[in-house]
Amino acid sequence: MSNKAFSPTPLTLHPSTAKISEVFRSIQGEGPYAGVPQVFIRFFGCHMHCSWCDTPDSIGDGKRVYKEYTLPQLVRTVGPLAKDCHSVSLTGGEPLLQADFIKLLIPHLKKMGSKIYLETSGVLFKELKKVVGGVDIVAMDLKLPSSTRCRPFWEEHAEFLKIAKRKDCFIKTVISGETTREDVVRAARLVSAVAPRTFFVLQPNTFDLHNGAVGKCRDFQTVCLKYLSDVRILPQLHKFMKVR
Ligand code: SF4
Image 1 (cartoon, rainbow, N blue to C red):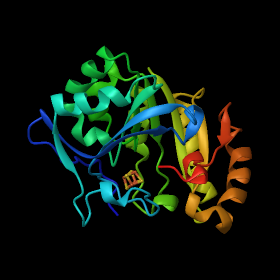
Image 2: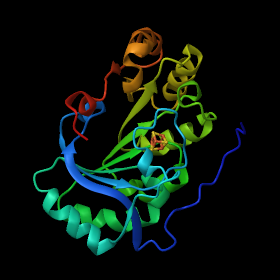
Image 3: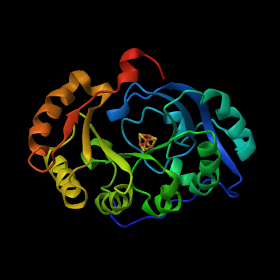
Image 4: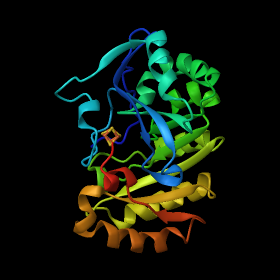
């Protein structure tokens, strides 16, 4: 597959509306903020095709399950849900495909007193630049080609991290039964070169827990600790609790 940088097509023709798969309140299930209450705004559409995608209805292949929201409609929906929440998670799909809308949305969420938690594939660095000023926490994926079965995104991830590291940023990489040590070493070196103090999560693929992913995480943690100071193995908490 081609390794050239690519330009994804933004999903909103006019930034005053957005395609949203769902808005709901739950707990964060991944990474260092696991367990905090959040409002999730799941943006529709994704430019990736990860083999283990757990939100297939939001990626835009086949079924098109979304509702079009204007800015005031979305703010009115989020408002009552956000009371006493830790933050609002902008998730997907890939939220940054709708970065122009997010740029308009963030000030309204801030006015409610919400922190902004961005969950992203960690590739669309030009789009991140548009919104990063208003984002508090960046939950950045690092996509390993042997896990996703997509092309590598090393250069895009490095550019993305250079911007994201200005914020409270952590990295999550999904480890499947197929993930290679070579990819994990390359990822750890990449992070070490750009932002070596970044909190780094090895997340066993929930579908592969009994298929070698946990054992691989333990091996890869030792490998990653040669390059990075804080490497944790953390599963998806919400999947164990059977909540979305
Ligand atoms: S980046 Fe996320 S939403 Fe997109 S295909 Fe991968 S897992 Fe699914």
